[in-house]
Image (tube, rainbow, N blue to C red; front, side, top):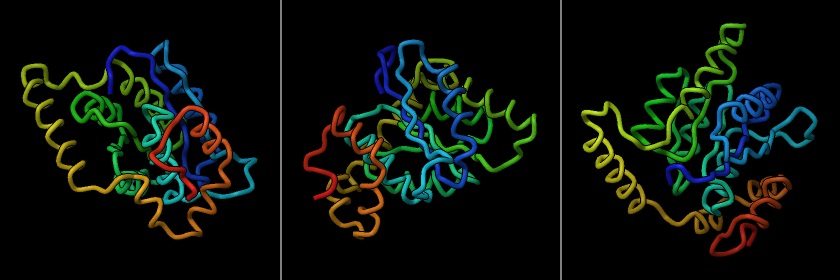
Amino acid sequence: MLKNVAMRIGIIQASSQAEKNELIFNTVKKYAPKDAEVINFGCTLDEQEKYSYIDVSVLVGILLASGAVDFVVTGCSSGQGMMLACNSMPGVICGYAPTPKDSYLFAQINNGNAISLPLGEDYTWAGEDNFEKTIEALFSEPFGQGYPKSEAARKLKDTEKLKEIRSLSQIQFEDLLALLDESIIEKINKKNDVIEFVKECGKLRRDYNE
């Protein structure tokens, strides 16, 4: 991810946590870099179609593979399922961030392009406070600086090595789309806000619904 350059940040979480969508969107807008564009793709309470963490992970993959967005903030009830599903998408490096420390270390050391939040856990007042601090820590510094500073060079070298290995072990995202079950593709095509945004701002080697 480029440092100190205007970025697009996508917000999209599983339908099971639709009531948290506004909280996620407003909090990310509050702490994202000032020149970043934050786009809310739901899922919201007024959407009739319901999207599981599996469905959303494919949408996350489309948004990132197309270049329509640079980073995605997502989540599900536990955050774990979404993290695992997103990491199954070619080109997606998704962290799991239940705490501010986790989000900060992911941004600085792993320098990925998506983060998954446990949206169904401990949402008392203290839970919302932890959530806000987690988002604040995520965007507190430019990504990919390494941590601790004394080990930054080694940490960044390992991060790039991991990305290279993952790239070699994965097929192209467009090729994965061609292999997915038709029922998944049909559902994905109904998420008009994502699909239209990708058509306008992104690019894939071939169309997503071929």
